[in-house]
Amino acid sequence: MARNGIGSSGGKKNGAGQFFSATLLLWLVSVVFEIAFNLRTELLWVICGGCFFQLMNWVVRSWISRDPIFVNTSVSLLHSIITSASVVFILLNQCLAKGLDEMFDHSELVGGTWKWAYPALCFSCGYFAYDQWDMLQYRLYSGLIPSILVHHLVLLVCFTLALYRNVTINYLILTLICEMHSIFLHVRKLRRMAGIRDSNTALVKLEWVLNWTAFVFARCIPHILITIKLIKDAHKFGKGVELPLALSGMAGMNILNVGLGLDLFHAFRRERSHRRNQENGNLHDHGE
Image (cartoon, rainbow, N blue to C red; front, side, top):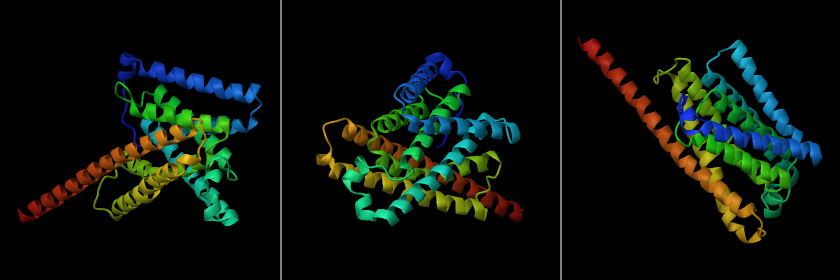
């Protein structure tokens, strides 16, 4: 996910850092309580996920770069690659074992849990907790109400409630398909930080093609289809919080996708405009 930048003083002035640090601490206490007192040892995958990505953070910081944004983006890229591979593996495994019709049955999506889906979701939950802590520690956010911190808090709440109640696990795995697109967002950011900004190169052009393709087919379409499926099967849900939570979560994701699409479009136009200016400059130099 693209970062908004470093809010060097915003966190101090409006207390956003203190608030989100407190919510993260409460979340951690809740998870530890579930593991220690309710003997939910399967939730240890959450702790493993957080510790793994914190370790990767240390590796990148020690051996490659100490720039907080570079380190954070590099670890986020690793998470996107691991999660994308996990989701594809889980889906292919279930497709071969049960077939598409049974896989996407309402009872299977809400009450069932595909093989490896629970630990995969736990591992991703651990990443979001790590990422929230990393952004708070190095102030990688800005604004009165930092959208990236709100986004992570909402994901932690939704994921953790689902893991505690063991419901909608498969639905949440489907939402993580969007990490395939996040790979290209992180690659683009790292490429620009590395100083590779020439939009005329074949590599950059290919990156944009893959970026837009993944945005449509791995982010927008899956999230729209999940939303349609939820609305279609609304009458099959019980009277609990699962349906309102799922619908509000997907509404938020679709709104974020619109914003992300606009940001991508503006970035694409800027790079094309820069390329045209370079070409015009070259023509002018040759004319002289």
